[in-house]
Length: 266
Length: 295
Image (tube, rainbow over all chains, first blue to last red; front, side, top):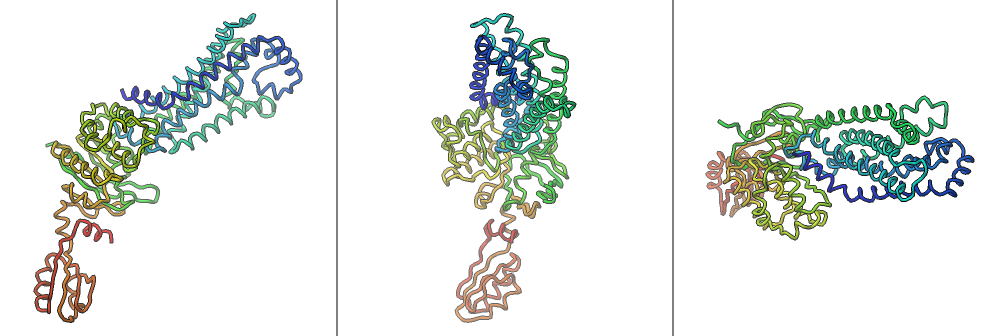
């Protein structure tokens, strides 16, 4: 019962930013379908991408051939830093506010002195995190769906992007789970935010650097972002590693979070 | 026989090299109002947090409402009301939302809420405002309501009158009296000695993490030295009275001493042999008893 009460509490605290984040993502993916359907834009992108250095293409997380197709351009919307940032805001905000934030604000004592297990606090934070990410990834896909319904593109189907939205959800659910672990260890939201943002940024930079710098290419699997390849998902669906690694890392982080938070002094 | 609501033996807690609490042993009976006195850093808040299981003890053991201290089980906390020493709320929630949320977590109906709101003077319009617009006093009142709204069997109140005006303090004392009449146990920490003297059945004094004295208010007072003030009509050798107790002021025609209760009759006899013009023997207030412990 307390998980439900705590979940409603998280929803009340975070519902205001969820709406603009979801709208922003939906609008962005909708816009990408329009960009993909404009011949002049495709032509411009073709020329620009042909002239672009591989380092820039790596930043967009796609190869040249896919990039200039309509399907590829729509897929770019799921790897674009804007979309990643929208998802990251939620994946950082909710876990850090839930445990470390309550401790830092001084409100944890009010909650923890009641008949609420530590595990239910972690579970409520997890449900709020995952539910919000479902709404955000869903909003991104709905943006694609509406865009393609308004302006159909030859050979491009919205259903192809559903697994991409799932992959987007998975990768940020994994980061969010790591965020819950960081939050379970910290005493202030600020510290938790700093650590988790560092993890996200570090993972992103490592993935990018490993793509463009062959000497460190072998380190790429260490970055969680290496298990998020929207263009490959569009073409071939979710690969086993794209599912197994985020799920395993997220589950391990959560298990640790449950153990650590149950044993720590508040 | 039921276990006392609070029963602890040898409870201790360290933070690194700092000893926050050492060897605390206490029993608080059902229906008792128990005062926990001590200066800042004495370990009052640590004790309450240990009793609630918010932190784990490094040593010792005990029970709260029959459950082991530090137990992470939850059912027993349904019957506890807790007011933290540093009152903090969710600034974007209204007072009413805050009370509903916390009552929901307690899993009990907030049967005492309307009466508490009325007595503490929190109105419906105030409750509809976001908590970040509240004054410190209003936050404290909201804190008291959230702690007591579900009619707890055991109330743990950390500095409950902090920031309250005298009228609301009075209302709080009446609430504590009613809780005791209803059979609830109240464990309150405080710096405000007259308040403890007024509402508590028993008091523990804490110093540097250790209990220095436990007893009922009257016994504590009795155990303390009396203050004897004497005036003389002619100069006397007041220093010669030093063997009766501690000289505070020794002037030729005026003397003030702290004297053990048992030594008072002999001192009075001695003073009667001197050119005495006036003598006053004062019972110590709890504050003086308290200060004597911490000097």
